Length: 570
Image (tube, rainbow, N blue to C red; front, side, top):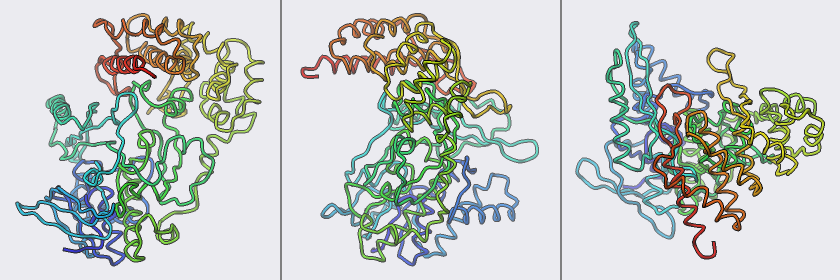
């Protein structure tokens, strides 16, 4: 069999990619391991849209799905009508659909993908194609092709937490959904299965529970190496516009984890130092994040595309995945039409077909483009995040130093000006940071996003936690004894942020200053070896759940780092 394009995966992004490509008149084959289209939007019960509504082709299909649901008087959130619409539109566009397949091999020649091999109903099939779109979400085709990938955060390799959705029926006949979180590595089959079973067991007593979703709600997995890798630092700190945007995604760095000491410094600069949880931004996605680096002719459509772990928190949402799927389909069709590799297709060949209005980034400037008076006012407030980030992003040392020098010692202005200066690496911040950490200051800075009551801040961070993190970020060797004192005491939910940040800070200082490694090892090794030492918190901070021990990952980090320090030449 021969096709122009093979789309592997008929889910949230893959269905849009297949329809977009087929509507351009190219010959499209869709291979789906399940028995229906839509992926998490249908089988995972993720029927709504968070922050951003769909655009372009995804918006058209959503409208048709809602119309189908209304005519059928459906009360399931539109799951079954959406399946029907996606299948009908793909068939109407001329796509060849095959369900229940197991893709087991790829054809490669001269670093170019030429086709796929799959099992279906006990028979092996194969087909050639000019372009293959990997829309499997877990990068199954890219892995078969030998492409490089990365997974999870640097601290312990964990991806974002997952959830499995359970549907229950309300008294009025409509459906409600419950989503117990799964904080486990989904690539460990035994551990992930155990977590799924436990989540189901925890809900067995829920009233009117009707069924569990077919698919667990995976937020993140592998990210394939692409021609360009979009990082959170690119999005938050780089003022240069993206020249080839295939989507404008409106979202925020959406995570509910409490063990943020294991996340990257960019993530903690935004979430911890600036308390910017819930701050909605516009993200421009470059065309090359869909183009696989190691194998020609292979495109990506789904959450496994070319972003880092941090950016994946924001760009994994339904609407964004629909936009990526449409762009991948249009890019694949353009490659076929022009007789080019996807990596060679000029942006101008697809730009007119993308549903992109003018760049909406003025809203971002309102977050980190404050004038001097607004920065000063913000630094003296309980919600200083925008002022801190404006000063950091625009390197406003000359504004921050007078704020620090003229502020009343112990005031918010002094502390929060020091936080911003520390992000810039200015050592004038160190005396304030050390004092706040030593005092274990319980003052807090708040996010701009309120809780459901419209008043209570949804996210707060204590000054001592911010200070301890920043002492580590600045690799302050004079704070080793202070950080050791911050580790003292029981590891409760209240002390967890400070203690976890202090442990990681000591490891950062040791990495930067080898002469202090023996001293730091003497502090941390006894803790890691002590079975009674613990760090405890709720691993998903906003949910009502028991406090659990989270020290295993930190013990492992200590063991790995100290072992690396002992290696010759380290």
